[in-house]
Image 1 (spheres, rainbow, N blue to C red):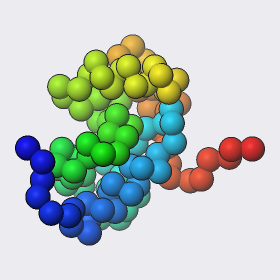
Image 2 (image 1 turned 45 degrees about the vertical axis):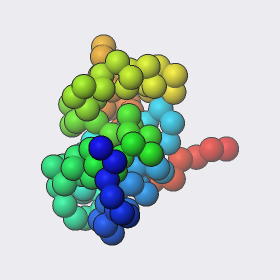
Image 3 (image 1 turned 135 degrees about the horizontal axis):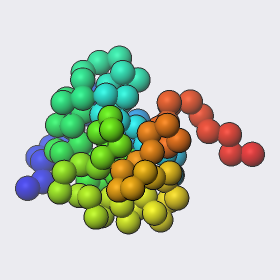
Length: 106
């Protein structure tokens, strides 16, 4: 079921950050809350489950690198396509975690 209306300001900030996560990188739900300085992993998860279909949702993972429940196969396919560092069927958080700093594209 599609949400009605526009996302609230907090959700907009979460979605904006998710859109900036570079290809091949991930952030955990907690990383996003910490970067924004508000909310927590559950609040970020609620935003993603309600509004996250239009952003690269597969770049948002649990702290242990596992994908959102029920989306494992689609997530793994996207990660392989983007060459996200993996450890089995999860993102390698040491290599793939993005800290929010601009990436050097030179």
